[in-house]
Length: 530
Image: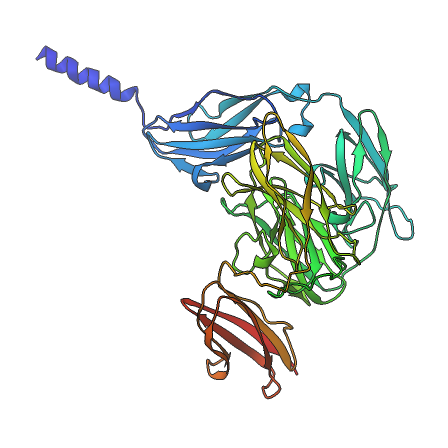
């Protein structure tokens, strides 16, 4: 009897010392970033408790890290008892590190009774005291100083490393790590302008900041006011579906049709507008006149992406949908895809245009594609002298891809980044447009494009592409679903097509056109105005 009582008492004590609660564990306890080519580390978060663990948020002293959770999870989320989640930590803002930043802690806040728990971080490389100063005056076109102007500094032309604001006299000043920058200024009611007197980051003049040097740069902002023609939306992470709170949105006039531009066409861009993304992930761009525009988002450690109506990342212009801006448009969200720029390799080169008659290299960007895994990595813009630099490449085999709206993609010869060749120079990309219309490439998907113009009177063009040969029909319907006209009803080979539609015998109103091609069925709306 005495023995039985002892067992009962022991069980009660065991239960009382193991309450129902989560128990977070992080392994390893430390991560070390050894050099510029080792800027991504991983860890595992365990729940050793007997209740679900809720990860609420993370914080660190320095904004140098991009933390990604397995399966695209975003905080808050739960880890069940005895389960684990893998995380990756990318050291992104490495160019801004000083000796005081080489030791840090990543804090995990949760419902664990001992929250927060820590993951210690050590950075073994930095450039301390290698800083210069950029200062200047921001004014309007009449040279009146502008106060409260936001001034942005883009490292290598693509990473927003810092920002400041002008004082009451229009002056600004900022200390920056040494390196190459583009500078931009933004104020409500004025056109966002990059140094070089342009709204286009592709055309911004690069500025070199050296250690101990002061560079003076003045910018003038054109007044634009409230034209009533504005497009707005958010930048959204394609995996976590969270807002991207830093970046720039560039819109340029143009209409998407599958027809490539003719060879020897002038490469110049005009009518470009831009705006920086707000801290809440939203953007708003005002234009001067009504037209169709491409909308493209750029952000640190994301691939550039165009707006498209499917809500998918559109890295290439062929997957974009242009937007007709004739009023204030909302919810034109741009879905962004993370790049894989965790290395330290560089690719330098120049663009070669073989035909004569145009030396204008505006609006061309260069992407790095891995030949090992097919992933797209870093990017940059081709400058007016035809030169480019693509940075932050890990070790591996690559090919560069140059793209410009309306032209076919052009690629470089393969090259290798390794411990011996950490920088590769003299890479050439032949931007050959002379055969753009000679041989149409086979599309990779079936897609029905928005008609152009729209609204229209009386004629418009309807374009589509098909990746497979099939019987295809294209029909027009009214709002009640009555068939108005059959434009196509025949077998077609894989390719891109455009047909004309004349609505001279139709009343003003909303109509629909429907494409059936194999297993694909798509519908779009068009408007007749008379």
